[in-house]
Image (cartoon, rainbow, N blue to C red; front, side):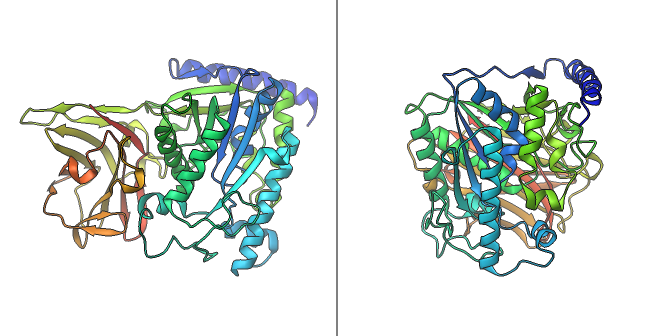
Amino acid sequence: MNRRVFGFSLICGFILLHFCRMTFAGVITPMPSFTDKDRVLILAPHPDDEGIATGGVIQQALKSGAKVKVVLLTNGENNELSFIVYKKRPVLRPKELLAMGEMRFGETLNAAEVLGLSPGDVVSLGYPDFGTMDIFTEYWGPVKRPFRGMLSRQLYVPYESARSFGSPYVGESILGELRDILLDFKPTKVFVSHPADVNRDHRALYLFTKVALWDLEGQISPPELYPYIVHVVGWPTPRGYFPALALNVPPELVKSDIQWQTDPLEEGEVLKKHDAIMKYVSQVKCAPRYLVTFDRSNELFGDYPSVPIVRQMTSLPAWQRVGTGDDGGSTKVKASARQIASVSYARQGNNFLVRMVLKNAFDKELGVSIFLMGYRKDVPFAQMPKIRLIVGIDGFHIKDGRKNVPSKEVQYVVKDRELVFTLPLSLLGSPERILSTAKTSLYDLTLDETAWRVLLLK
């Protein structure tokens, strides 16, 4: 790129970034600098996420003398569209798909070298692409068989180069690996995918990471957590390589209670990040203007605060509204297409209540689901209930993972646009924390989905 053009663009970018900070005053703050005492852990759902989301962070951390480790949750073997473009034909046989997964891991190693990392700094876990959210919500404890990969048809980590080679596709495997990595590396800063990201693997990695960190409370110093967001409908704009423009907060999340932080990049860091992104050949070939869209004058990070849910003894619930609907949290569809107006929670005595308000009157053809995953320190997470409340064309159902649960203990009331669920906390395992999200769907097609949030029971 012409340096004079770059310089002019950089000035424009700083002006835009300044305007952005003024617009979101009190929301976007500078990210703290790295030091040689830092141990930086980058957790990526797929090969390329670490480069496009934290390529600048990796460079800055290494310059400061910090230790950096990159861990990939999957090898991205399910990205069939990119493989068709790359191979000029469908890639359907399991062996071919796994070969593409190995290739994508190799692309990450090449990109990491550009950013200054060695092969020993990058680890693949090899779990199933587009399967880790199903594992988080359904595959724990005794199961008839592990999760089966959508296209690879694998039940166990198939990559010999993976740290988890041979491990079954179940929640205990992923959680155990992350715990071991955190305990061994003892990071001071963890960069991980976002709970509002549209991609299911991105959400799942955040959830597994939160649980792993809770499990290790008291065993390691709590690291700072920096979630990065990648997949939001229609974001970022404009698409293409505009290295001097700032990466702004997605419009759907502007009104959310996410605490955003920005990390400005120097010109050399931006250019080197571009060189690294171009190493993801299979992905760049499919979407040449997409990955480079994230190579801008800053990188963006932010997490939701936990939401306290206080126990009440009053006759009417005091609802705690969580930032969803028009407050942000739904990044799957634009505001005009959202189905969910709001989600609120309350605790009355020994009962837990959830209220979902829709944009329009409830129709049973529009399926509604509430996920409630309880956590408590003295019970292994694998043994805690993984509750899903479902209302749809087939009536009302409760699931704990893959098992059906009798619904006698749970009440729900539908009134026009409002659905209210009441269930005993014992059904959730009498938790100290709850991970929760809500979604609407048409048969198996998800229409709208809120961000996962952490609820603290007080």
